[in-house]
Image (cartoon, helix red, strand yellow):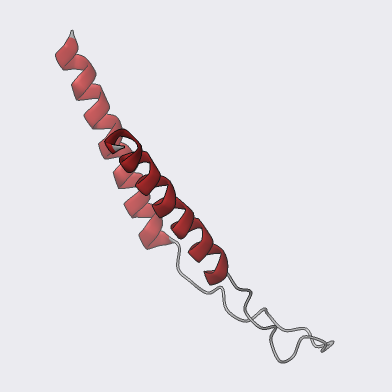
Amino acid sequence: MKKLHKPLMFSLLMLFFLLSAQTGITQPPPPADQGSNSNKAPSGGGAPVDGGLYIALAMVAGFGAWKWVKAEKLR
């Protein structure tokens, strides 16, 4: 019974997370001026990209350097 306990609890936990994630995913309501014919920019989406891009590039460079140093130590 002990061998079955750990996989069963893990499966139930994963099932709980999957089912709760499905209920949390919703679509936002459409904008109020959805049917207008005016030439306006879409609302939202004005998030800056540069800060996140620099962080991502730094993380990729750090990971590559770590893998390189680890490979050099094995030689």
